[in-house]
Length: 203
Length: 298
Image (tube, rainbow over all chains, first blue to last red; front, side, top):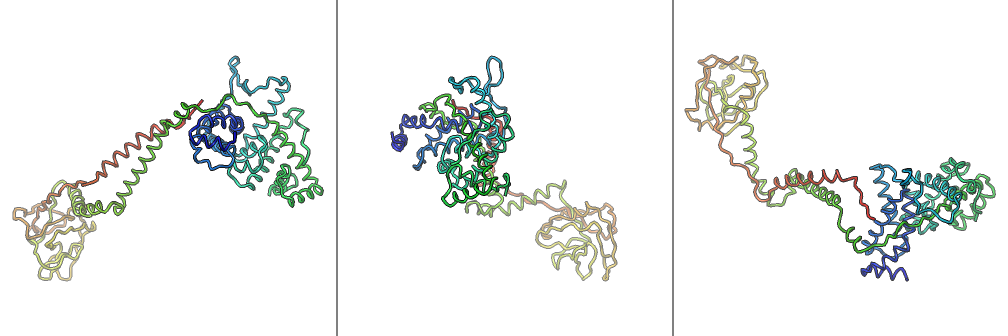
């Protein structure tokens, strides 16, 4: 169904219509929060709170891209959470293996059952290395690089999400990539073999 | 400009946008030329491509649960958390308290009726201040008049103990009490007194004690109204004071007229300020204690 029609139905008080929108965008919203916060329980909280907030404030939605609007709410909530963490630093809440009591890098539900153990290990190593480098980026750079490079958004949509001019998005993305490249160069040897030499062809 | 391996920030930015095909035709031509002529640019583009490739390898995770809303979830979320209520109450109470304190500091900000009341209360407030000052002394003050009761004419003393006396002599402490209430301010510890009867004035310097100076600061009633019973013959020797026959009398003065109690009429500002201050404390402390608690909705 057309998104505009759904939004009108929500504004008339139809919760089911809103839940259809939730199902459409929850994966993007959750992954954005997960990459921004690098903490799954917090990402769940932020995603849930963002959808509640979106439902309560749908009256203020002035048209345009609903995806950009909901992702902006998620991004802003992530900024708030990151600021709160700076004020009240807490220990990382890593998932814990109930048998060994050791922290799990990935919870079980994240694992792809079709992957071989080697592939899974390589993917985890790569993901950890990249995520650590993303964690070291300033908040604004982090949001842009996740939206464009991880989620594959174009510059204009990313600009709508972070509410910044196109030129700002372009320059932040370039600087974020430059920092990530330097960071990844520092852990080049730790990257899985298959990811060391591959590169995309130039446009 | 930061150096990124022989290329500058501007070139790096162009290369980054070139990779995403986000350049205008003019910019794209410029980058093509750069890539042909500058090997550092080609190397930088290669590194950029690889970084972007790695980022795109990050998996998209499945959601652990659906984030769909239920009527209960919305209802629960609409009720503001307790600590948020505390925080806002504390802030509002603090603002109101500041407002009322500002009214105290700037009376003109008060409503016209209150400003008039304040104006009318000024004399009473001054009387209250005066009463507080007098209350610090254990007994009513006494004034020594040299050479008998004061007269009700002529100008007032000329300072530094050089009081006025009838007949032109500027004798020592021969002071003059004016008809209205007058406050004589305490003078310097060293009092300079002119000998009585001397016209040129031989100066005799007295080391007056600070308490004597303070005692000099009294408020006196008009001399006409002085009761005879209030006049007391002084007999105690005082350092630097004239002989007994020349000494005057101690005038035990001062019946302070009863001052009416100042009460705040109309709006009870003081009570409101106390209540607001208590409210600020009662809400701010629990809010501060609860500040680390976060909302968890699952």
